[in-house]
Amino acid sequence: MTALKDSPAGSPVESAVQATPARARRSRRVRPSVALALAVVGLLGLAVAAPQLLATHDPTAIDFSAALQAPSADHWFGTDESGRDLYSRVVHGTRESLTIGLGAAALSLALALVLGALAALGGRFVSGAVNRLVEILFAFPTLLFALLLVAILGPSATTQIVAVGVGSAPGYARIVRGQILAARRSGYVEAAIALGHPRSVILRQHVIPNAVRPLVAVFTLCVGQSIVWASGLSFLGLGVAPPSSEWGALLDAGRAYVTHAPWLVVIPGLVIVTLALAATAIGKDIQARLESGDS
Image 1 (tube, rainbow, N blue to C red):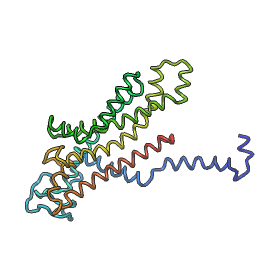
Image 2 (cartoon, rainbow, N blue to C red):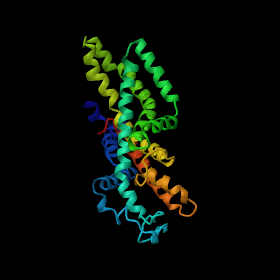
Image 3 (cartoon, helix red, strand yellow):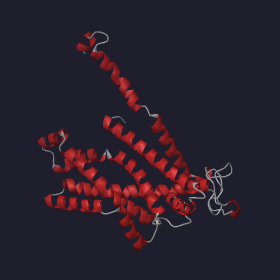
Image 4 (cartoon, helix red, strand yellow):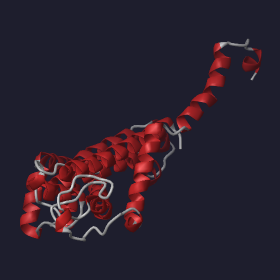
């Protein structure tokens, strides 16, 4: 306290003390890009909870006289080959698309937690076996795995969730393994060992919580990636079958008319990209706040 009191005005010590609250305020401030991403997610959440509030038409109403109309004041995103309003179909397809993305992300991280924990905490034999399994899964193409599932289960949302979840799990398993190993080598774990705390207590109170905490941001990133992957599978005909308005299914249905009605592919694709970018922006912001210790 004396050093601070005796420091002359404009000294490095005083400048650092004054700059700390300013940096803290800047770290808590929401950046415009993150605010925009949150607005996009909020709008999509409204589309999930109450799509009738946003839709302008019945998404299943067929009107062949209005088929393949370009975007206009009456049909904001245009119409498809059956005259159905594309904007309303995108709105009503949000629930199914997000369900697939969230389900695949949850399955992926659940498998990653199990595999990563076994690889980091298991014995020599268990760790080696799990690492080999992760390498095999990592080398196995997700598309080939999806084809195998479609042949067994048929194209459906469940097939997409399992294919994307299992296909992306190995990469996240490596992240979990690295986080657990880093936590085990940290100073607070070494101090707990020196104090004689049981291994189970150290794992439960120190290693696992500090290893899992960064996965909050990873999960947000995983949701966006899963929706992109699932939409890609639907585009190839490996997802939800028509007449579903799931975003990937809309891409699949519109590719036959891409030269005559490009909006059938471009607009659903832009919606998918927008959601992926919003999820990435939010995930990176959460990660930055966790690393800086801000809440």
